[in-house]
Length: 103
Image (tube, rainbow, N blue to C red; front, side):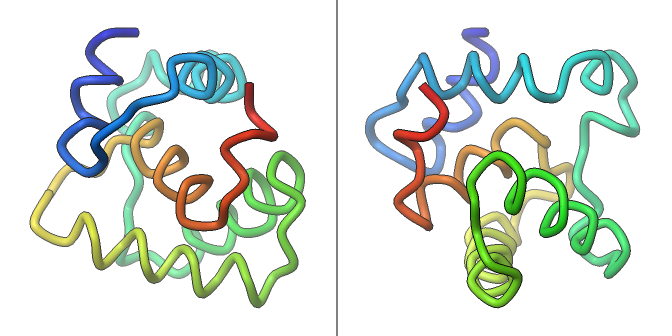
């Protein structure tokens, strides 16, 4: 859990540990595989899956709001070639003011 928090802290000053734990639980077994633990931010299908999955189901975002927030997070993490899924999801929740829905 501390590795995820350390990565998230590169982008934000205060890390909500309960939210990180909720995201890790949500992602589950996907985090065990290197490929699925990363977000392919240049792949429109991947971003649509995030929008229709995590953003809609866990955060309760409408597609248009999710798309805007995904662009914000992608821009924020653009210097990072390997975008961790937990970090991406955390920043998405933070950008949309929905961290409280996670924990």
